[in-house]
Image (cartoon, rainbow, N blue to C red; front, side, top):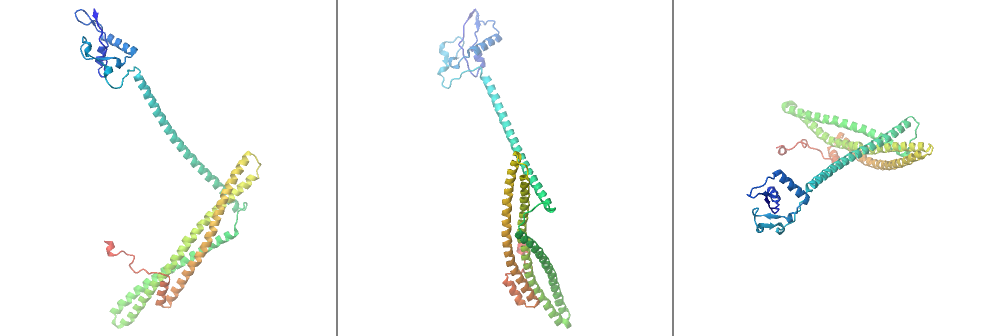
Length: 376
């Protein structure tokens, strides 16, 4: 049996050609192939590839038949481009790389989950600290308040400021009473003006339907209409008076009293932490007590600064409130007196002059209603 070796032709796209080029085919004298099975030839081929690891640059591409000459063989070294080295462990490396990427992705996911857990844990701790501080502060203030109510605790008192605060509260109560009475007067007087208007219309209608009493009904109708007009002018003055008193009582005084409430809360906290510091100073001095005393001193100084700041704010607001109250009430009381006197004296000219003096503009009937053009 004769045999010859065919040049190894390896291509990346044709597995059958590479298989045929690397096999050793036995041929007998009559030109027939031997009895080598396909499985045995594949096994020999794979063993040769795994052992030798052929370089593609050293192989040749066969363009002719098995018995062709060397003219049909094209060396792959003449093909331009990067050399491709076959590596039997390439698939294994890709598998390891894939495993590495998967582990890094898993690690990133675990890191992100840990970051979110740490963030939520930090928020929970922060909220717990806020609630803890609020609970301690509320406990100390409640204890101080009860001690003051039963006469067992001491409180810080600014006699001059406390007197001014009590005077302000008493003044506010009295001004609220004046405001309520002025509103009641406005409502009753408004009803009276409406009654005078209706009465004047009735007299005017009867003067036309009763010829024998036309003159009497006529001048009574004119009198009621004049009173109605002067009453509307007086209502404008009284409404302005009520509006100014309402602003003074429910805005200016209320704003000052809100600052007073903050001051009283700060005073209670200041006394609570002062009492706590005094009690700690009476305890035996050890490491734990010293640390508690240091923390109590810090809290005491913090609330002392807050208390002193609010005390200064209250003093300034009380001073400005007193000046503003005198200025506003001087103007409003003069307006109320002049308007009432002119109305009941029947002096329409003086009544109109009073409104001009205080820049009061009366609303004409129906001025609040939109015009027919705006309704369209």
